Length: 115
Length: 113
Image 1 (cartoon, rainbow over the protein chains, first blue to last red):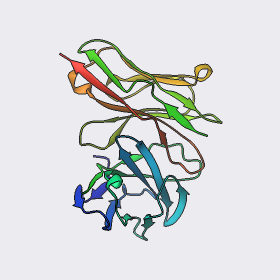
Image 2 (image 1 turned 30 degrees about the horizontal axis):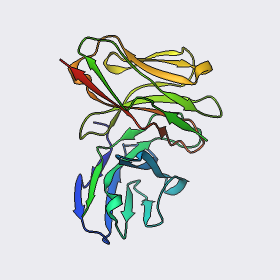
Image 3 (image 1 turned 180 degrees about the vertical axis):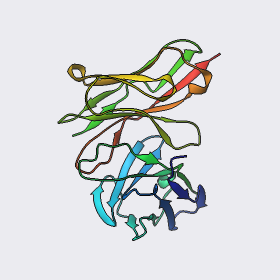
Image 4 (image 1 turned 135 degrees about the vertical axis):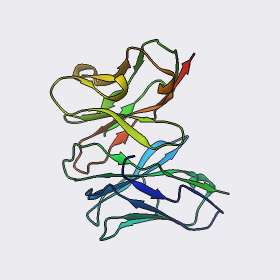
């Protein structure tokens, strides 16, 4: 158990819809990362937050957004969903950013299926 | 740009045989290197990491990896594979100012009885 909690574990929705994925980081960790895992693209970094502020952006679509709340949990919002958005979305946490050399602790992921 | 290459998409080994999974990286400075394992339906678990010092690092579950700067490689090894090692293995590089990790596309390991 990594200590990172993601909900929901599975989600099935239709094209054009909007969903919200939630992540609670490991106790004490200030930084949250979102990754998308698909068969063709592998593990793609989407976005990172540190103590409530956006820290780094990766390959995140404009239809996607995220935020980190004062209690440090994070939400990833996916809107105008397309079939290609079907993937496993991982949240990870670590305790510091900026020169962080540490490992990331991963949740078990939220599997999104868009029909 | 940072990148990680895992040249083998799928490897099959017999139980009890030795294993080596290849990883090459591209990074502008001293890299921090990681190997993660993902079992079906699970998240990623850290096997081992290299930050500095001894270039041969030991990890969990009997795995080890060797950092070779001259070859830009960080190959994962295990002397004797167990059936429970069947999983997907990801090499990653990090240490940038952001802290995020860049992952390779993974190597799926199958173990024959």
